[in-house]
Image (tube, rainbow, N blue to C red; front, top):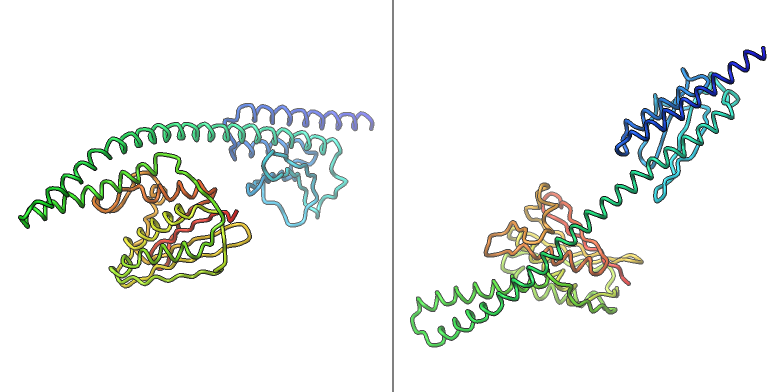
Length: 363
């Protein structure tokens, strides 16, 4: 009888050691956090349990959950926490069905084995999670370097363009003053309007390319919103677009740069007007909670196709005609929002149109 017990213990010990060896080997060969790797680990765990033909191994980490087979509603189980820094703790379990087994059918050595395997799984996920974070950080730094170079180049180009544009504009206005031919006057007006349009693009390039001064102070939000809407009144009227303002808290204040907030509103509203059909409506919603101010612009235009939603904030990307858009408006808006430690998102409006949402901290 003692020989049988000794053989049983040795058999169980061999299974446990085999499990630990297999798990270590699987993790050593892994190239990332993959479902297949965790499946192999679970199969190794299942084989190590005394009644392995009936055992069900399961792992859950955050929303990720897999098992060697369907877990019945009523089970008895052993469990150990899987700890991963910066993530919610998960667990690894081994189940038996409650109809056939009780908690006494588990061994203490099996619990110790499960604890060890849980540590190995936690280390495996932590390792690749950290490598992924490092890779993301490296890509971010590389992108920042590219943007910095682009910013310097853009600032230089914008500066070099300013002087010749000023000369063209000055001489064109001088020629117009002394000219009496109506046809030539029309051509001169085209030159002047083109120069003014180009200077606006240069101004936006300058705005995009450098760190703009940020003068934040506690401001009442309502006057800024009303000013922006009244300034664009003619733009609304030209397309017979109705402007609706929903200001849910008229006394709300926020620590903001009033000029930059106005720039946000101008760009978003002008884009909405451009995208909207005649006799439609643009809704401006201003609301807040205890921590954030929300500015929501809803239009009934043609909307933004799914394949370009990720590009609309890229510098120089535009869907407008060459004479009506520079592709810098939304880049400027995103830069200002980030400068205020906020966020900007876009989603579809129904049945048609787009909704831009800006979130800015109140303090």
